[in-house]
Image 1 (cartoon, rainbow, N blue to C red):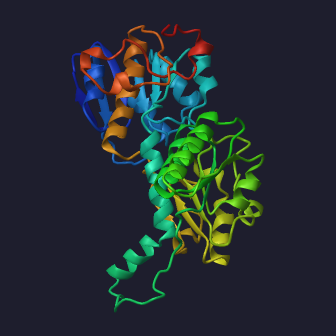
Image 2 (spheres, helix red, strand yellow; image 1 turned 30 degrees about the vertical axis):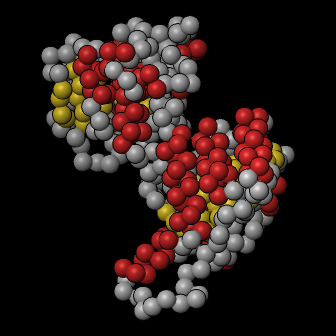
Length: 386
C-alpha cells in the first residue's frame, strides 16, 4: 500500500483491513470501534485544512478498505473511483449533511455512503440560540468595544438592542433542529411561533398549545403557533427568523434581496443550516442599508470565504461553522462514522432508525452490530435491521 509519503498517524498497524481518516477526530470510542473490527487506521496529519483530491487519492493508495471523510471534501466520481480501484467497500461522511457527496457516483461503484445524524439536534439548536441573542443584544459589538478600551462609563444609549421575550419567532424548516430551536425560544422566552415547512409538524404545534395551557393556568399570557403557507408570511410576521432547511435547488438563495426586504427593519436572521441558503451578497447589502437589522451566521455561501463586506458589518455575528462543536456531539459523530465503516466492512445490516444513541452512549460491548446510517442502503439493496 502507498500513501505517497504523506504524514499519517497509524493505529493498530497489524490490522487486516485498512481504513483512512482524512482528519483527526475527537474522542476515542470511534477508534476502538475500528480497531475492534480488525482495522489498521491511518489518520491524515497533513497541515492543509482542506485536503485536495490528489492528496486524498494519495492517502487511499492502492489498497484501502474504507474512508471517513469530511464535508469540505469533494466526494464524487473521481474519489469514489479511486476508492473502488483500491478495493474500497465503505465510505462515511463525518457530518449529518452530505451536499459534498455525489451519492449516485458512490452507488454506481457499489460503495455505501454513511452520515452521522441524531447527535447534532440540541447542539446545533443551542448555537442558533446563541447567535440569536448575541445579535439581538449586540454582544460581539460590546465585547469589541471593551477590548478596544473605549468604555468610559455607563450611558443610556450604549449598545441598545432588542428584547425578544414575548416576541414572534419564525423558523424555516421544522425538522429536528428547527423544532428544538423553536422549543427553546417558546419555553425559555415565551415567544409566539410561526413556521414554514412543506409538511405540518403536528408534534410541535401540539407542544406549543399544551405549553400555552400551562402558562394560562399560572396566570401568564397564552402563546400562539401557526404554520404559514409561504416563507414570505413567516418573514413578514417574525421578529427573529432562524433557518433550518435542507440545501437543494429549491432553497439555494432562499433568502435573497426580495425576501430580506420583507423582514422587519429590526429583525434578526439566523443561519446555522447551509451557507448557500442565503444570498450572502444580498445580505451584506441589506445589513449595510439597515443598521438595525441583525444577522447571526454559522455557515457561509463560499465557505471558508465570506462575501466582500460581511466582515465589516458590525450588525452581523459570524462564527466559523461550529454549530456541532460540543465534545459530546463531535465525538458522537466520529463514533457513528466509524460504526458505518466498520459495520459495512463486517457485512452487518444498516440500522437506519432515528435513534442512534445506542451507538454513542452506553457500554462499548452493547454497540449494535449495524451501520447507523447509510443514505444509499436502499439503492444498493442492503439489508436493514428489522
